[in-house]
Image 1 (cartoon, helix red, strand yellow):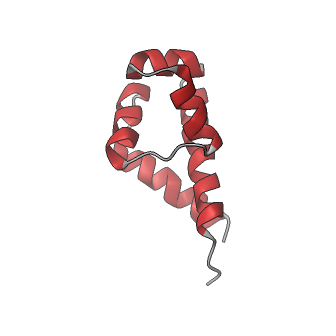
Image 2: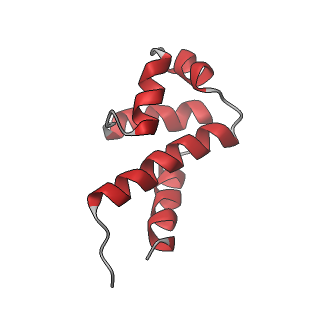
Length: 83
């Protein structure tokens, strides 16, 4: 089994966060407003300039209307596709 660097895994996470936002039709500024944070918060975690903790990921999932479990499944699928 091929192992992927943490950087590649982070890139997959960032891409998934961006994709779930876009799939739900949110612009960064709209998601930020619903989260109660500046738009730069969303921009920074999508670009990798900021890391999120699990509670922040959970809050994003709640706002875009998916469960944390579904998000984790999507992340695992994305990581497994790259193998």
